[in-house]
Image 1 (cartoon, rainbow over the protein chains, first blue to last red):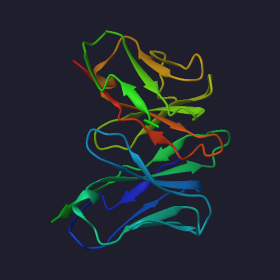
Image 2 (image 1 turned 30 degrees about the vertical axis):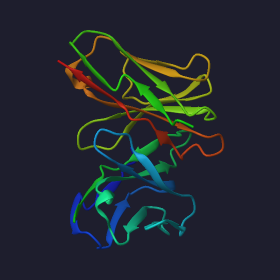
Image 3 (image 1 turned 180 degrees about the vertical axis):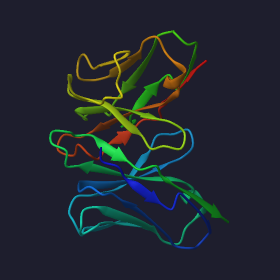
Image 4 (image 1 turned 90 degrees about the horizontal axis):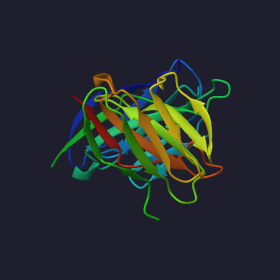
Length: 113
Length: 114
């Protein structure tokens, strides 16, 4: 089946630093999404991307849909302590008839004040 | 708009017992999804409904699992004869017509099978 590989698995940064994480696959995806999950809670949608090459921002967050349709990245600028959490990428693949989203394993972000 | 709600938030059960979880989606959302998440993993798709019709089921959804959405509003997920491997967070999500992949998740039900 289609799989998403997220890197890095974890990041430890200082408050104020910029962060970059990415998501890759050997398969083509039609839609990419980025979610953030806090402990004990459900994921929260951050950004949705629908076209190859698309660059979308949401406040300090910027995400891009890779030109090859096999990757996406998420940048966070000027990190703050509340950015702590696990960031998941998710994609809608091209397997005929399936509407499911496939999720990566997440990037755990720790921000030191 | 109160968001997606799930009940209960936590459930501890003994192996072999049946459990049922409930999900109430955002009111104007026509699609409802169930996912399972284990420690260190992302959510894994189980099944989804469009209105009251169950349109897709994952191979993860064994015969012991059944989901319903009888009136196209709330949904239930039942697990029969629970096994220790069923211990996980069960997440529900919903989405608007026309934006099926922008899924909004509930807080989840954490199941522990002892």
